[in-house]
Picture (cartoon, rainbow, N blue to C red):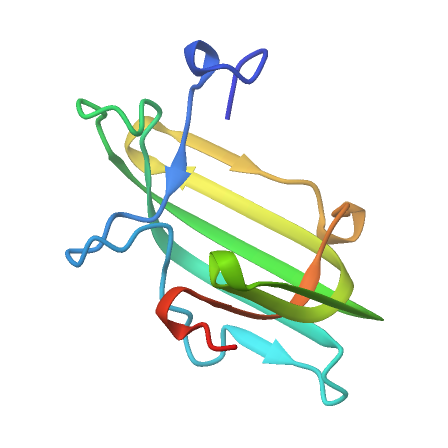
Length: 143
């Protein structure tokens, strides 16, 4: 989050999951019932509550202080039925799926500093680009 133009000097919050002991970052486990898929396979809903994150406004600076926070969110993708495929063997990257619409509603709380933020309602949200599909890269890429 920024106060004013989105430049480093105006950043007041940066929310992300803590870095795992393995070094994996920007990833959290999804609980068993966190992702639901409609019977026709065209609508995917990811909903998670009380996800542990940190607020680290100066990240990735080495002296950046991480304040515990939590996030709740619901994200819904609906397939538009149009196939998409991108395959680049030289970069060992492939993606295939379907274009989709996507909506998101989120809420963040940083209790220790009394900060909270909530997005507009899910039904008012709209993404310009969304795709439901599969990605393969690196050593898992096979021609």
